[in-house]
Amino acid sequence: MRVFASNYTFDYSWNEVSTANWLKYCPWNKSSSHVVAVDTLSRYVDPGTGILRTERLITCTQTAPDWLVSLLGGSCTSYSYETSYVDPEEKKVTMCSTNLTWSNMISVRETVVYQPDESASEPGHERTKFEQEARITALCGGWKKVKAKIEEASVERFRENAKKGREGFEAVLEMSRRVFGEEREKEHERRRAELMEA
Image (cartoon, rainbow, N blue to C red; front, side, top):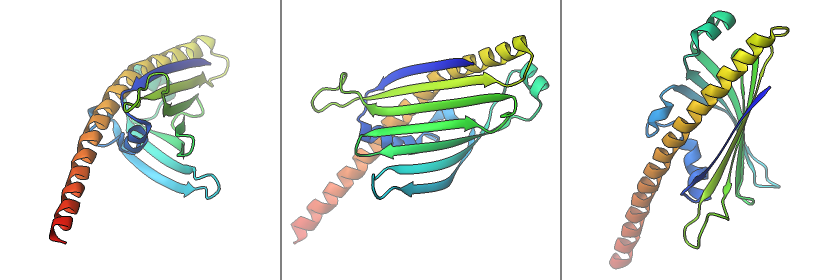
């Protein structure tokens, strides 16, 4: 098993990050063109805790190394299953995903957590910390060198994609802040106009 871990601090509040998270794979994110579809399978708010639990199927087209495709077979379309928990009380988003494609040959279990970064925030300027961990285990029994090569290639892929993913999400956050700010301004203008007419 190999582990990939990444930490980052976004210069946006937890409210902004947790809202924009649902837009992560939209056209604003030029780094997510490989994501073909995001299908929500279920969504449920626990009445006791207020935690939003969502299950999604994510369909991607990604190129794997040629040697890996020839070894494992398959196509360029891959599927992941994601379960996320949004806890508004604790201000914590936890996303857990696992691969469905090639799952008999490799297990990829990824956990992502977004929480306010109290140590990097200042009054009036909140920041959000991002923690990512992927546990990658090749399951092809007996082939130690092949297993090690598959795990190493997967960790390297995570490293490359993590940087692109952060950059793409930064673009989504920036656009969300602008669009939501414009909508808030329109709403203020509408209310002012109503007050003037009253």
